[in-house]
Length: 146
Image 1 (cartoon, rainbow, N blue to C red):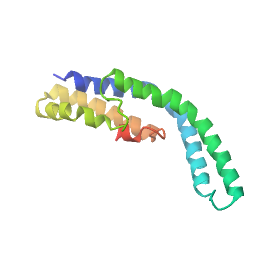
Image 2 (image 1 turned 120 degrees about the vertical axis):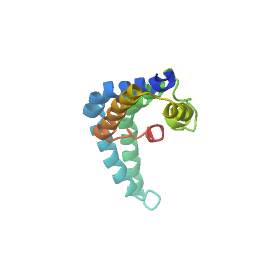
Image 3 (image 1 turned 90 degrees about the vertical axis):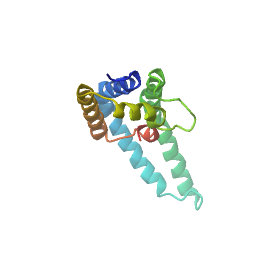
Image 4 (image 1 turned 45 degrees about the horizontal axis):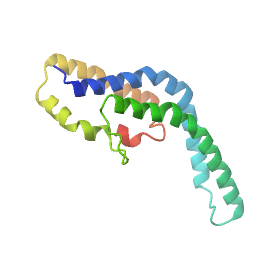
């Protein structure tokens, strides 16, 4: 039988899967745009001349404004869901989900049924699909998803 801690991980994967289409349609293009802005910003030398400093500040302002929807609509809801499911501590160091669940996963790997394995494979594929199709950490969740 699948332990509750593992079921919580499954619920989180279901949450990601449920929101996947919205993430892909609304936020992946925004992430791509933010990545391009970051590349432009990184080519500037704001400490060397005032023109680069002005351009840098403009790009930084644009990044901040465009990042807001990702923070409000992905980052905060994902963190809240993790806390709600009690699979992440909400600590300041943003440790990965693995840290809080490693012992439960290890125990489950030692004592599972073939039906459990089938269910795990379904969720594994669902998570892999999410990561492949979104191909993003949404510029802020890489530590959690690692």
